[in-house]
Structure formats: C-alpha cells, structure tokens
Length: 582
Image 1: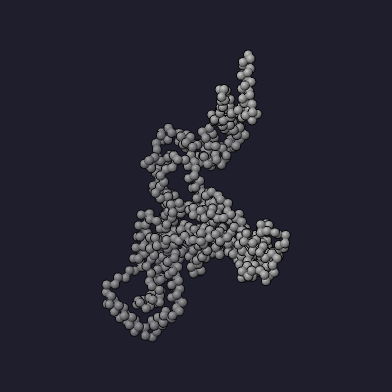
Image 2: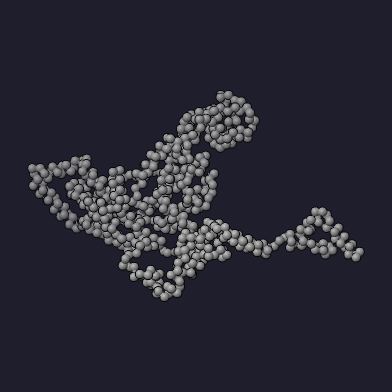
C-alpha cells in the first residue's frame, strides 16, 4: 500500500481524521475572530463527480462505476502525495507550500473515502439492485439494454468532452510545477510573520496592555510570557480578559493552520481538556485553586451594620465580605465596591419588608454562585487551551524573540535592505551547485572560492572566538574588530551589565569580564570618564557670581550663606573700613 511511504505525521493525520470523520477544533469564544481568506488560495481543488445519489439521477454511470472511479481517485491521490513528499524542498517557503499541497490531497482523500463509504453502506439500495441486475438470469438482456442506453446518450451529446482522471491529475501536477517555478504564495502571511518563520503578536499585545489591572510590559517580555496567565489576579479576569484570551487563541490556531497544516491538534486538544477537567475537580489547576470561592460566598454571612456610620466606613470590609452579606440578605451582589456598599448600607435599620424590592436578586444565591463558578471554569479552560497552543508554537516564539532582539539592538548604520522574500532563504544547497572547495575558502562575488593568497592576505585563516557573543567565531582581524560595534556584542555586553563603549573593546571572555581585576579596571576607567564629564559640566554654586552695588563679586554659595545671616553688606562695610584704616 502506498500510504506507508508517507511520513509519520501524514499517516497519523489520515488515520485520525478518517476515524473521527473530520474532527474539527472546538469553536473558541473570542472578542473578534481573525479570519483566514481561503478564497485567495491559488491551489485549486481536484474536480470531482457529484455526490453518489445525484450521479444515479443525472449520469448514466452505475453505482459500480462510481465505486470504481472513487477507488481510482484515491489511488491517484496517494501517488500524487508520494511524489509531492519526495520532491526536494530547498527553502523554508517551499516546505510550507508543500505541506499545504499535501493538505489539499489529504482532504480530498478523506472526502473520496467518505463518499466511497456511503456507496458501500448503500442506504438507498441502488448498489444492491445493480448487482442483482447484472448477476441475475437476464444478464445478457440487461447488458444490451444498457449498451443501447449508452449509445443513445452519446448520440444526443456527441460533442461532450469527458476528461479522465489521469489527465486531470496530470494537469494538477503541471500547475504544481508552475507554482514551484514561480515561487508563488499558497497562503497569506504578514510581513512581520516572514512567511511562517515568526509570530505577529502586536495586535494581541495591544489588547493585553489595555486590560485593567494588568502590569504593563514591553513587547519582548510579552512574547516570553503571553501564556503565563497565572500571574494575573482572578479579580481582573473579567469579560474583557475573556475576549482577549479568545482573540489570542484564534490567532494561534490560525498560525498553526497556516504554518503546520498537517498537524492534527484535535486529538491532543481533547486530551488537554480532559486533563484540565481532572485538575479542576481536584482543585490543582494553576491559578484556580478549589478554595478560590470561600464558604461565606456560598451561603452568605450576615454583617452587623450598627458599627458603620457612613458608606465610606462600610467600604473598608472589602468586596468579598460585602458580597457575602448581600447574598445572605438575598440582594443583588454585583457591581463595584461603591455600589455594593451603598446597596448594603441602604438596608441599615430596615426589616426585610421595608427594603426596596428593586434591590433583591432575581435568582437565588446558589444559582448566582453556580453561574460564577461556570464562568470561572470557562475562563480556566481557555487558559488550558492557551497553554497547549503555546507549546505548539514554542519554536516560532523563540525565533520571534531572537528576531525582535536583533532588530532592537541594531544601530542606524546596520540597517540594510532586507531580501524580497524571507522564505526564499535557502536552507540547503544541491550537491551539483557546490563548487570544489577542499580548503573551505570563503566564496567571492561570483560564487567561487577566493584565491588562497588573498585568503592569507586578509588574515581569514585566523579565527577569533568571542564568548560574549555566544561563542561566535569571526574570521580575520577586520571582522573581529568590526563586531565590537555590532548588535550581537552589544547585546552580550548589556546582559553582563557593562557599557559597550570603545574603552571596553577587545574583551571577549565572560570570565575575564567578570574577574575582579578586570572589574576594577573597568570601574576605574568608568569613574575616570565620569570625572572628566563632571569637570566640564557647569556648576552653579561655584561658577555663578553675584555683585553688589559696591562692585564686590562673590559666588553663589558665599552669597547664600551671607544672605541667610543678613551679613552681606556688613561684611563689605567692615572690609572697606579695614582698608581705610590701613
């Protein structure tokens, strides 16, 4: 069977999808869904016959012929999938496009299989009647009857063109080759996503920093911690937070479908939800302990209002205690702290009959608590799904973090024009394109190794490792000296807490940089630079001068001291008197 020639992930996708009859990801609640435009998908689907019941009515094909055609279609799809899997992919973009073409084949294979299953089930009995007709005692009469019917059909439509499956699949293969040659985009990605290499979480980040009660972080920190929702207080997980979770998960599901179209997340997602149900019942789910709703909140506890004289004093007991007291009285327990305090304080000194009827809750306290518990469970379930989706895009998250750090660490002179398509970056080179290069010399502008004398002249035979740059090796002294002003070394120095200036060049070892002698030297140089800057800075206390009516000039500090003592003019007069007496 050809199916065993597929990679494991394709075979797993076919089997699980067939057994579950097209399992779909559960619909996620969101505040705004990012829809993927399928109409822009240039890879056309294979032309199929109409459903089996319509075939019997509109075509002269018998159920057995439909059955044979579906078997042929499945076999040709398998052959096409094998050819597509064996095709060489030289870039990341080609691999993504190839998986999307395989996804089209897999979906078509499943569709043909389901239709073939309907033929074998034979709910309308047409297949059984067909078999009885061709195998009964009048098989020859039945044959000639069908033969006359077939000739009459061709006589009525002499110009009708029937395209066999072999020609149709050949055209599809030719269209696929054209897409390979033209390097067309089979799926849409934003510029920030780099055709599936990175994540574009800017919209999700904007929604996150606009949540109330959430600590604001920078974009890189958000990339690292967007699935760390346990740190958010439960009191802040409201409807707005729920909409944010839905928006974020919709984006992650969309990215997984575009970057990894052959990944079947339905089965793993069901397991994650079952694990969440067990943790929720045991009260061990992170961020949602079972004791999160206290016993007072379940039944309510009366609160003596006699010690409280104003609403402001009543507000000091807190939201949870006010809610418990309102539930004990059967009143509405929602709203802000001010609303709850005013509602409860309005019942002071009143009997149950004297309380305004509009303040009573329409539902009982038990129903309110059940509704609140269900809301919390729904949000916690979305957090569990978010954790699963974050695991699936962990490699993309790491690449996104490195890409953002690289962009932020660049200086103005290092910005160069990027390539037109980041997906065109070749991951591997074909053997026939690799030139003969036994000494591993660098390639020149023409793609050939440079002369050996030029290699020695520029010192490219010398290697300079830099531990601060992550053990990056630089060939030649020119590249080594240049790297001290580039983003990689600047990022490493910043991580060590050392300023990346020209005074700290030629330091490549982390141990040397953190050694006490080097630290003393660095501190000495840094203090020396700071003293030089301090010496040229304007000092108001010393350089700012004041002059009185007699022409005496003093600095600001002396003037302030004499002015506070009211001795400024007296001192001058005493000095003048001393000069006269001399």
